[in-house]
Amino acid sequence: MKLYKEKTICFSGHRNLPTNSYQYEKLWIDLYEEIEKAIKDGFDTFLMGACYGFDLLAAEMVLVQKTLIIKEQKRIKLIAAIPFKEQAAKWKEKDREKYFKILKQCDEVIYVNIQYSFNCYHKRNRFMVDNSSRLICYYDGGKSGTGYTVHYAKKMGCEEINLYK
Image (cartoon, rainbow, N blue to C red; front, side):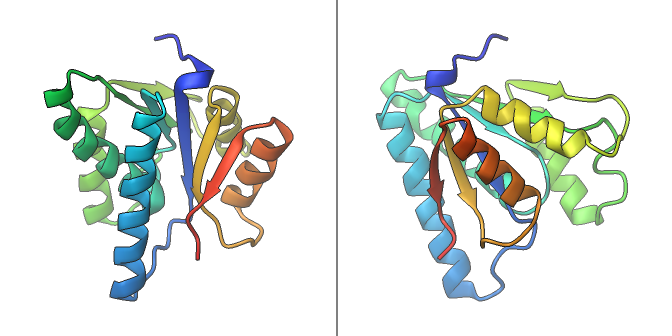
């Protein structure tokens, strides 16, 4: 599948989501609204890194939007960019179940690497940014894989929308 950068959004965020129900609900609503706005802005492809936490939450929101916009005769795609094949092997069972359920609903699954390597997550993050014109993130400002992605996106001129508040 060819990705059209100007119509593609990628997601990056922390694995740990808010535990406070008000903050979690606010993140859920803000993410839903940003995806809805992106579709209205003409974005039709959503690229997610397929890690538990923010990535899978974003994927769930895209899947909800896919079912809602069918009535409007629009089509959006959800693509998983996975850093390596066995990424979920050591996750908690509930996270793995959600992961595999979402992967079955993706329009495409791209394995950036077949096996784990020390830089496979950075390769995946660069792949997503290099193929997107907007990044929706959940980034607290600390040093992390999400931080790397946000800084790389800025360097590459990718628009950033940070939902961390």
